[in-house]
Image (cartoon, rainbow, N blue to C red; front, side, top):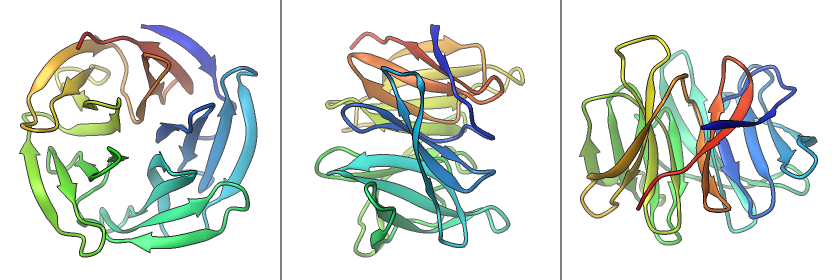
Length: 212
């Protein structure tokens, strides 16, 4: 594990990769921000206009997918597909309401994660129905997609700042490999053969690798 950059933002939650740069969600400011890997700085900011907060994010087909999370009811009402050029909403997608910590797209299926219910699910965006679920022993803090496998961050709960990032088989939900992380993770993504994840306390983006 190593630090890649410190991000000048109020809060650092979700994380995704657009093929060139990273995007983060700032739940305090209700914004999504583009972070240049080359310049190691924020180069674009988009205000999240729906009533909830932009907790989980993913990049799909030149657009951002952002969960519209209600922190009072601890539920997600919908997923917003956002145009990254002008910040306009392209469409809204349905999802299970228990999705509270992560979303991903594997080029065919949509996935969501729940910290509260400790599971990952595959779901349909037309109905919001979960069609496959994997249950875990620990809360799921974030998910992403490597191109072949899911990646997930788990709260190990033995200390305040102990997490685990795991490579997961999307067919059966089993862990292929894993690595311990000494801080709490709120966002994870895959880029350039590495796993990028957030250290929310230090407002850092850090990197690690996993076998598999």
